[in-house]
Image (cartoon, rainbow, N blue to C red; front, side):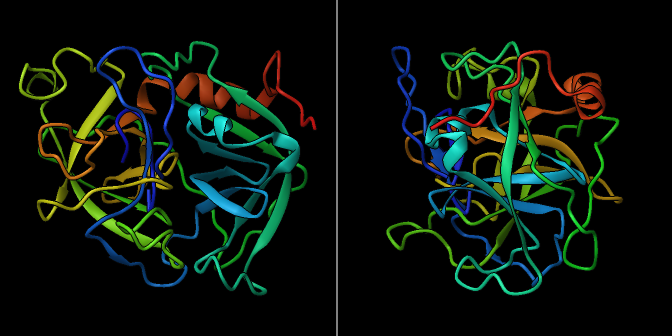
Length: 267
């Protein structure tokens, strides 16, 4: 994953940074192909038909992703694809939706990457089935040392975007360690989760941003991939997700009522 950016099979997106930060959307490096449709909640946010970020299907009309993913294109040019395994072969298992409205968290700060969450309202309801299912929100944040997972279609080194969904196990880090001078040196807010790929050297990359951090015996979303360092495999600049547990009330309220100032599609 990128230095405070997205994943690619988690995504690489370079954004203007303050001083020492370098943002990018990452992809999953060192992971493996997921069993087709074993993660039926996964969605692909695309602009102009090209995958940009991962997302999670929380409601038949809403997906959750990262706010910084909006920088990848215009909403009028955006589509959300659900039921997808291969980017090259959508088939009957998938559905594609224009975006009706975007609701970024009102406190999103592209400088610090705090509150990096975005809810996208789809133009129509998803038809649920074997390849398209909802996922819930975790009620508790993962403890240090907990094993979670990520998935995405992000970059594979120099090989471009992964044509198929990749997945990766990760271990949650102690936030005090992640914030010390050898790691992110105070740049990690209490609403963020640091983690490291398992095995060592594996990580999300460009295109993996926005994908859900899934934890617990009953798989639930505990975070959304946000950013990482310039070298996504650098153990001292581990990937960082935005905790959804801290924002559960905002997410649930938005799913029920929408947002006060949604960003409509525009050319």
